[in-house]
Image 1 (cartoon, rainbow, N blue to C red):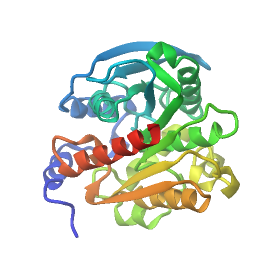
Image 2 (cartoon, rainbow, N blue to C red):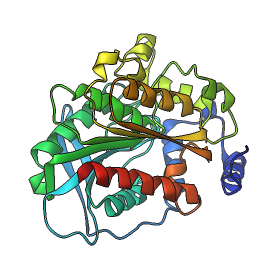
Image 3 (cartoon, rainbow, N blue to C red):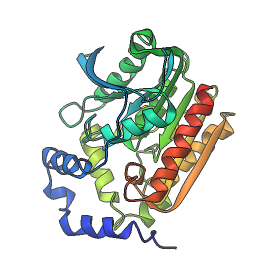
Length: 311
């Protein structure tokens, strides 16, 4: 089965404008990603506020969304960690998605603008995300949120950070109600069948993943098998007691298999986990609701799972 017909125009457009990763700089790629994200339709929410929270190396910017049409305080909270290979992306490029998640989940969304590589390589972004989650838990009431109903979510590299943060907070807290893992990076060895089958022609490429990994980890190849980089490689008992999860993958995504393998590892550890593969879809589809009907379905699945976890 090929990609769904509605996906092909996007792939054709990207093929016409893309440069090889070896010819791009992080700055140039960030500009292109920002321009691509700017076409997304942004829903109205009740309130949006940019602020900062204390981090390990200075303040961490966050953007806080309050959903439309929801009264009262003590709302559930979703801490969102954006994708972009640990190198690109920010709260602005994910503004449209964060608004949709807030409205559909009926939750306060805190989108974290963690530090990016190569300027700030591993573990800078991870440390910022852990600090942000802890700050949200300690200051939930100030945000109009409930400290006992906090979920964590992210896509791609943000899905990687979500999985790792959930593991890191398992014993120390704060307790999380749910983890939303959208085509997450879980095994930085990049040796799965889907990494080879979908190596080229489907937006995210195998070459791109090695480019991103190189900027994130630098020359330290020993980090590739560290569970704080590759959460799939964590010991089985390190997954026990993690929050329930929804893992969303795409058929034509190099990251498909490692995402599904992580979901299966969670299930084997006794974690209530749903794994949903969207056939005919590509990496990044979750943010393309105006273009791809399956993206709207996936966002609805994600936010329904969040509502159930928060109930």
